[in-house]
Image 1 (tube, rainbow, N blue to C red):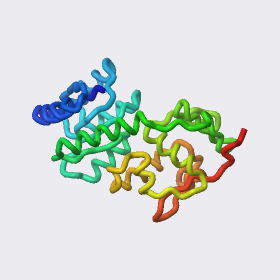
Image 2 (cartoon, one colour; image 1 turned 180 degrees about the vertical axis):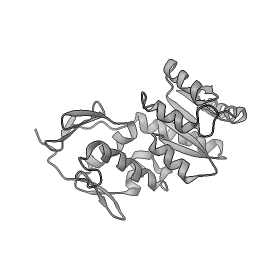
Image 3 (cartoon, rainbow, N blue to C red; image 1 turned 90 degrees about the horizontal axis):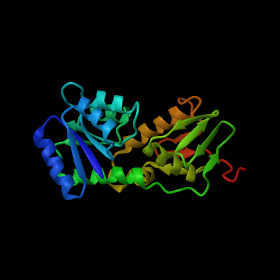
Length: 232
């Protein structure tokens, strides 16, 4: 698989390149967001590792532009563990983040986990599931149909919705969601669940502030409404 590393620090790029190549990945590099977007349009990578602090176009601007035309998974590199940077990156469409400084094992583990999430979604027994007259889910195309309009889901959004629907009527805990959607190595990242539930609600709920489909079980997790799964 091909990984695009975007950072203006040569030493950081060399460190990431060496450790990813040892794991069998192909690595391309860019020094800023402008170069990165140009490379993405010409040679689509499987994943992007994107630094936040860069000249010309920083990581936030880059991912905001990228998400206008691509759902390529992105891991952002943030300095000093700044919570605001992490949340902002996730809200703009990042799939994960790594806080500098980081070790090679952590970085490689995060890359593999994100790629695993993107490529290994279980296939449902029914291609299209009708929730009610307003909402249905096309699992083959990773799309939801809301009031007759198709809405594309990003891979992590799709995995989350899939697991919620598979357990419709039952409360799924934060820990269960993290393990199923992100992997066991993400057991402490509970804010991921909250953010992605909000993303889904924005796409499927008529009133995201008063959700009808994805219900919050306070202090425990989330529950997708029960419905007739065998609906014709």
